[in-house]
Image (tube, rainbow, N blue to C red; front, side, top):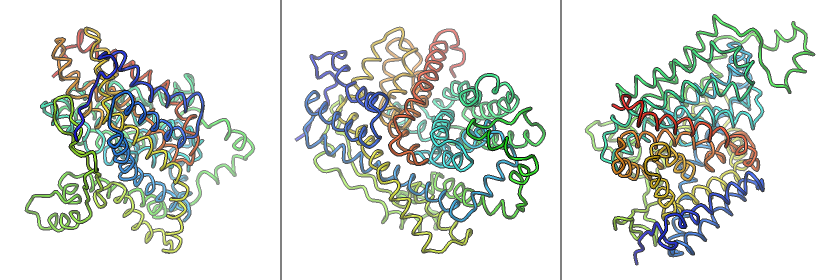
Length: 564
């Protein structure tokens, strides 16, 4: 028996239906930010609230509601949870073998300043990982690196989530942009151009804002030259690549240009004072200048430094390879070319990719147009980014000379430590799937679409809402892309601008999505502290969203010449 989504189930009113659809979202904020529940408790209870609203208010059959939750939970394990497990595992291998001490020293040799370390690791290196992999890997790995350098775990997670705003729209080899082409019929290159005329304004601002959040206004001015080098090099590369090369490479190119530009700049320029966190200053003041020099610059050779960094270099290579479209297709058993090597990989990928239908759900839900919605458990064992990271850990085993016994012990320890964080991730992704399958997300989108002449201002809010619910800019673009196009056309707004606004607004919601919060806390060992991280990020998310809203409104009116 099929069931048709009803977007105005309460009194046939968008407003009343939206108030009901908001209940699970408001509950989640209350549970974390006010009640300060542990993440897994907030996630599980929010899922239960969403199920109740879907079944009782939206009249969704209970079997479909629970099976949509199961589909989300499976997606929470693979690929998302798998990335977290393997990322933390790789980091732990470097710590257990002493290699991370050398990594820490090599970063300090470039700069001891915490502000500049955050720009190098959280902003530039994190953006590279976002461009190559996405799906939580950037925050997990860069936050773990910052914690290893001595950052407070909560601060490290919050700063990496904030820094991750700049690259999200072009993450995972441009998937958020290319995915929007299908449901909207608008060429990905055109969307890429428009996003590339919005997001660089945010990207050039993020390094400044990141340091301001860390150190305050006066301390930010001290490193303004470095901030400008980092932000401007990233934003310019992002603009040029998105407008002339397409959506696949802006993150990777921007991150590399920014990373090398800042590292080279710091060879010739140093801030007047070295910023450290309050908790660190006493130790530095007690240490003598001589002993401090010994701590900062031990005699590690270039070969030792290269060996210490090699796990993350190998990680970068594997993730980059996994992100190449043809190889990705082969790894998932979908390659149709003539290359013999890729065809061989395709044969293996075919046997390691499982797409079973979700029982009592697949093609049984009809959308607003009466079209059935497919529902499958997507299990790409070989093609998952987490598998690329695991292979990096296998290669790392031979480089750092750790025994197989200790390798497996470390992996087992990692899995045990991440048990509750994985439950959190599974529950919040399940909540997102229930919200989408029941039609609650679309109800909220329809409410914002009724803002008329003010829609250019509220258009980014749709993307922000979509990413908050789903944890993915790609999913938000698929969810609201067509609604953006139709609404924009009806009010005389350029639909290309609305599509770009959905993606650009979405990036500001990434840092507060339940999925991102859970991933970040899992990566830095803060399971149960999700409420603290949400309280840290929510104000920054709303502030950056406001900037995108104002920019989109101006581009729709005063700055319409910026639309390609």
